[in-house]
Length: 267
Image (cartoon, rainbow, N blue to C red; front, side):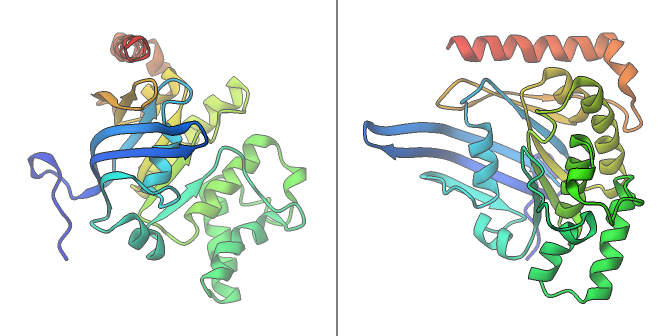
């Protein structure tokens, strides 16, 4: 089946959400997490979701990943339902914490999804080494997670999410618990990784500078029930460095995001 075209027939759609809503049933009645989400993401885009705590950013990512059902509307991932996309291994998922098994070496942590998928031992080793080198950890395959820093552990989790070569990478605040210096370094490395692989990336963050630096498109969300209140195109060059944060264009986009967040929280 030919992939559906996104707006203006540019590139094929990676993700399309039409009137998506999510409500959770609780003892006190339903809690509306998301309301009337309309969004299209092109293949190869780096899209950041940003909004106040509790606005449904992670819930929206989980809908895309088939970890949470939508209670209204429809979602398509690579022109399939989220369930079909999950079963066909369309995406890798990076959690807020690395979630590495402490009794396995770094290399064997990356092997885990490949073992489940039935890859041969030789292919598991080849892929683990390739993706460790891609995240600049080629020398650390025999180490255990506890021997690595927090930033290095999160890079291992990114390598694990990429090891079966999915079309897209879904990332739920992967650097939120790290110090600012480490976070800046990993932002630069992630941008380089995206430029090399051309994966579609969907990235949840609370950080305005992180969203503006990384994303080709920023999706700004309101307070609960989460709605999309603005979609901002960034348009920076792919080879940008952290010094771009001192430019008038960066500051202007950051100001716009901040104002939208303030307005969305007040509504």
